[in-house]
Length: 117
Image 1 (cartoon, rainbow, N blue to C red):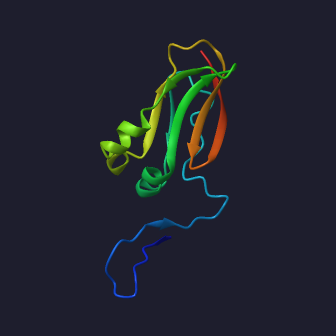
Image 2 (cartoon, rainbow, N blue to C red; image 1 turned 180 degrees about the vertical axis):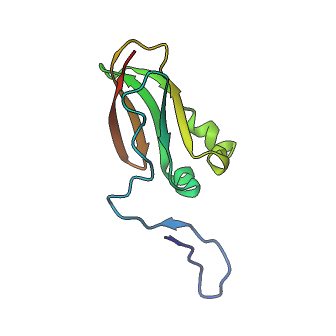
């Protein structure tokens, strides 16, 4: 739900507030899992993603970031208005355990992904 308040005269500055359930993440789990080509993260709502997304990256089992999606550039170019997903190519990675890191607002989630060959 989105609420847009205004002053009693209906004029002046206003802010947009997003009201969500604490369990709402705004995205789907990284898929397919296991994968040998692409790993995809799908986002539910373009406006929510523009407001809340801070990071989407792929890290190895030691936590070293292998690839980072340019969230700031995507927001500036309104990427999420036309696309609701981020893809990471994993076809050149070694078989093993990796993590997709997604930071929405202050919440950081690490999703385990298996790369198979």
